[in-house]
Length: 296
Ligand code: ATR
Image (cartoon, rainbow, N blue to C red; front, side, top):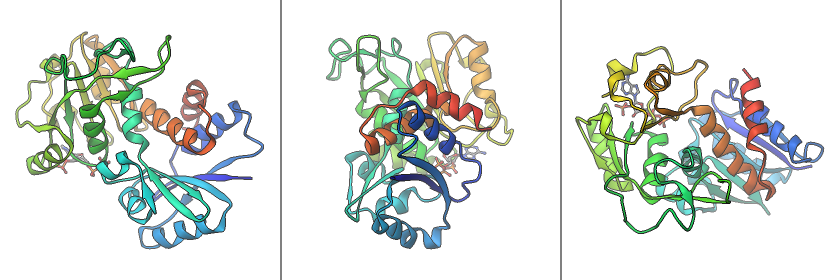
C-alpha cells in the first residue's frame, strides 16, 4: 500500500492530509493509498528522506517550509521547473531514486480564472509575444512563492481545464516589487521579470501577493505598494499564501469588484498536480477544495 505525506517544520496545521485524503477517496484509491504528515527538522531532513526513499513504502512526498531548497538538493533528478525555481515541493520515489518537481509553478497558472487575462482554449489564446505588453502582472515579494509565480507567469503554460478542454495561459510581462529591493532585482533578473520600485497597482490586470503580509493581521495597505482605490473590476487579485483568516487584501479587492483568487485555491491546484504525478490520475478539484476547507 503506497504511502504519501507532506513533510514540514512545523507541519501541525497543514491542510494537505485532509485535502489529499479527500482526493484519494474520490478517485477510489482510499483503500490503497494513504496521505499523512511528517514533522522533520532541517538537520535530519536529508537523512530521513533518503531513508523513506530507500525503504520502499513511500511513493512520494510533498515538501513545504523550510525544506523546499533542500528537497531539490538531495534529488537524483529534477524537472525544469524545480531547477529554474531552485526549489522542489514534490518528491517521487522509485527504485530508491528521488525525482524532484515543483508544482507551485503549474499551480499558479491553474489558479488563474479562465476567460480572463487572455486565458482560453489552447489554440485560440495565441502563443508568441502577441499582446504581452498589455498582459502585465505585478508580483509582490521575492521569496520562494514569488520565484514560482514569476517563472510561471513569464513563461505561460497550461491553465485550469476549461469547458472545451485544456486552456493556455499566455506569457506575462512580470514586474516584481519587494520590500528589500535588491532581492526583487536579483529574482527578476534570474527568472525573466523586471524589478519595479514604485508600481502603479491600478495599471496591472493581474496582481499576485506572495509576501507573508496579512498572515498575522498586518495591514497590506501600509506595507505593500497598494491602496484599496487601486482595485477595479477588470483586475485579478491573487493572494498566494493561505492563512486561517480571509485576507484583508482580497476583501478589499472583492469590494472593488475585482476577481479574487485565494491561497486555498493555490494549495488545491499544486496538490492536485502532485497527486497526479504519483497516481497518474487527475483528482477532483472540488473534493480537494471541500477537504481543505473542512480541515480547519
Ligand atoms: P516564501 O518562501 O514563503 O515566499 P520568504 O522567502 O520568507 O517566504 O519571503 C517572504 C516575502 O514576504 C519576502 O518577499 C519578504 O520581503 P523581504 O525580502 O524584504 O524580507 C516579504 N515580507 C515579509 N514581511 C514583510 C513586511 N512586513 N512588509 C513587506 N514585505 C514583507
